Length: 250
Image (cartoon, rainbow, N blue to C red; front, side):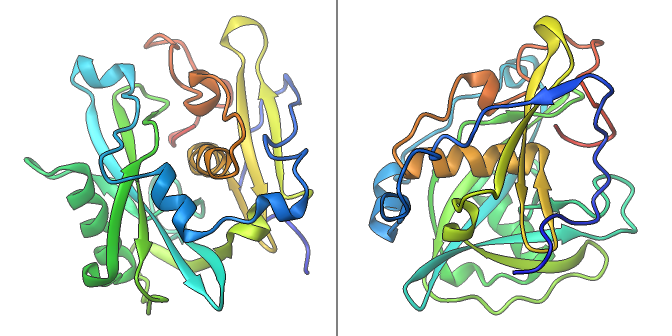
């Protein structure tokens, strides 16, 4: 295993403290084993995530796809490192996804965006249920994460305009000791838990890490925490900066 962590620029504020361990930290390795049947039972297609409060205020919907597939008996998830030439979220690790086109449902948006960004064949995507939704730091948009099983290991080709590289990460690595950590950014009632996964050569943080933490906590049967743990920008009024706020998503 090489050095953990990647080249992402983390806008860590001056006031921050170490956070809590991973929800699954007390489980032994055997109890962290996740099978396809478990994913389908926890995230059936009819599962709708808890809505972001900004949705009722007319915020812009986006959707991401969380594609999971079996490779030689081990489950992997597909992530991307966004192009360094993009205006927003440059060089960050994320799930494929983007804004919904008019009239699109979250599943359609997520599958379309995954096809556009990494050439994921829609024919091998089995869409399942949603994670609880996330609020962007601007509070003018929200993200609907759609879990999906792939019927075979995918052949992927990143779009040069949007994606620097494709990452295929095993769920076993994500739940391994020392990979996840939490930081508490800010002070007082506006402080928030910010989530991180330090991979071999990459760091997943912010919204994508919050989605992974939520996903893995439920799949391991552990507590994902409060709605603010799941959605760090939730409940912060418009005009009040989120700790460490940038032009990206918390």
